[in-house]
Length: 113
Image (cartoon, rainbow, N blue to C red; front, top):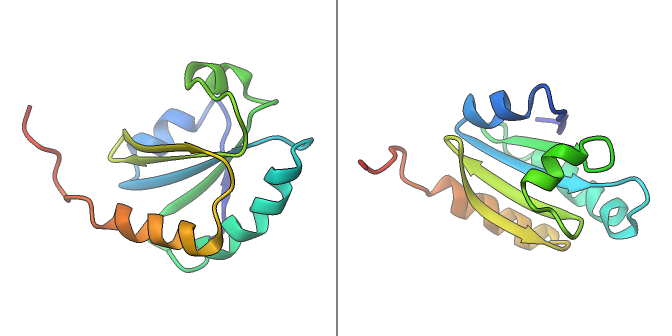
């Protein structure tokens, strides 16, 4: 699956209506973001069952602020609408692949509250 671009209009529905969503928070002026983009895109091709999304922090400052994004790139993962991973900085292809594998191993059901 190719990566999808998120905006303020579809951010909430994307994380709530999909089981597993990874989001790359980036900006056009960010060198590390540009180096990470092809890694992220390549790994997304291996996982059709995961939504790989990208959110431009400059164009979506309200969301970036609400999520306290202070450094980019930042990777966040949402499982059934809940944030389960949040890490600033680039990941290697092997690290990203390992992260996706670990996220897929999360329990299918949310624990009872």
